[in-house]
Image (cartoon, rainbow, N blue to C red; front, side, top):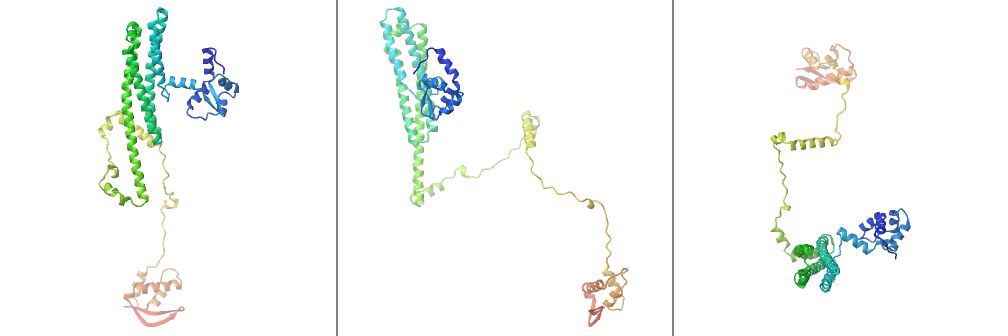
Length: 398
């Protein structure tokens, strides 16, 4: 595997392949970054992918590509999205801190003593920085585990493992504070210049703040574990109730009916809606109300209006006044004339002057109508006569 000869060369390669590296970093949790997709992001130039593989930035895993751990961890640490909490770094820095303090106390050369002192400052800063980052990562991982892990058993195991890491971080904080306060009193008394004092004060403050955050994290873990235990008890109880229900023994083996009869939760009641009318004075004087009214009016204008059932147009012939003369026979007038005569009804109807020509059938129709309408005032005899081919009774007026 080749190595970069300078920082400029490394930065130039990272700048050139930033699109590919950004996509690989975003999809780091999945192992499905295909070679063909990487080829598309590098303008279909295979030599650029081979260059990244040769220089150890990415690695080839069959049909997929992965980012090397050293670069992946670098991006995660810088962006503070690391899911792995490693407390061994603090332990290593504590060992390096004690070693450089020992070298400082045994060294007589001022220049080399200064180098050892600078290395001690660097170790102290790294201990504080890594501790703060571990606490932040721990808090984020705890929340993500409880909210996103679907399996109950895995969630419980992860939270317990994170609690162990919390204890390890707290132990390393105590060890770091013990080194500063008790184990190396000679060094921190001899080498305590202004810059060293500022570094020590900052480290103490960060370690103390991290320890207090660990106390809150411990409470959060205990709360989550209690919630998981409570949810597990509910799950077991529901599963037991379902088992009894499937066997048709729910009411026989449990007191569910009695428990439900004693409960009257609010969510089972019907919800009552109350309309609140705004004050007229408020609508007239408030600028906020005016803006709201304008929004409502604009929204109502934008609403699509549905089709309406509209009647058709009135025909024009109905709009013009016209009269129709109906030429009909007044049967009441015919009956009055009949009652004043001495003839029988059939003969009178046939010989009556109607002032127009009528057929025999129409006159026979008038005879039948008068006989039926004024039957109470007519005398129907038992005599029948035949005329115009029609047999009729002889009817007189009473």
